[in-house]
Length: 393
Image (cartoon, rainbow, N blue to C red; front, side, top):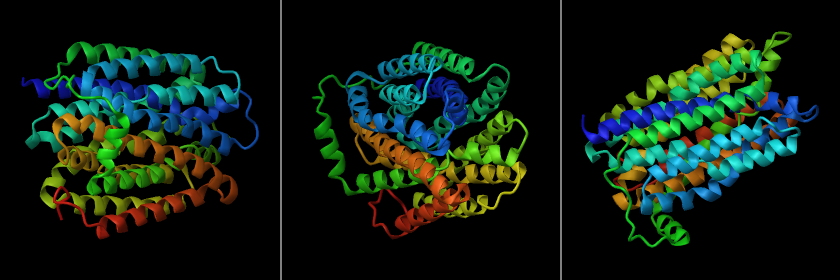
């Protein structure tokens, strides 16, 4: 087997385990906050708990990308895997909401396992195979996000959220060891690169195409993450008197199942249709489904809407990642993708906070409608933007 294909397979398995670890925990943060004593304004506390990780992650991503281009990506996998695993274990001992938020901030400091794996594929895969390869590696984390909520729902129900956090930390350690031992980089980093994060940022922001892609990623991350802290609360309300842990896991998993099924196919469609058309179709479809989700009156209807939404959002990250990777030299890809990740993380930080306050002031259904409006705005931006030839029409 060719080295890049073997790396892709190993990294896919690693991102599956990483995705499982992440999604064992995130859907159940409101439950963790209730366990540590939050009884009022749960929507807002959940929003800040979700968002805090992404703020620190957004700040640190350019530094990790610079180090990856200079010293290689496997070292960054070790840093991220061990750091995140330790933080999950510490979270299991949290006793109040402020400790949860502090540890979520710390989690963002170490974040980057899956983005590093994606960058490793983007740097080492042949150009003619990059689109499908990125679709495959994106599906790894998505598949993990399918299995994670399902497992996490049952674990939270039978073992409790604290024990679930301990298992998530152990899963990250296993993923890190497996990935580092079983991969080998063709482009192992360029030690001659002078590490200057501010200069890397200036170089990236001087390219109009990259700036447009960064803003696009920021906006649809705001939209997609706004619902994360309030979706478990919506599920709790639809569940009524029944235990919501298992339905929460299933409903969160449905979007991931759809992403796993659709992501590789979107990669192939982008070659046939062009990236602009793929983004347009995906954004318009996701916007429409988001608005319809606000009308959900049962768990079955909500689950169906989440599945259809996953089919559309599966296109967004692989296509944007491929475009960014192709628009810069190989020895700058980790830095460009890291800055893209930084914009995405910032959007992911703003989204949950915004969603929490919207739900508190206007009700949970308003968040779904707001997401649909924002995705529609992004679709219009895609249609009107004058991008370089890197984005085909």
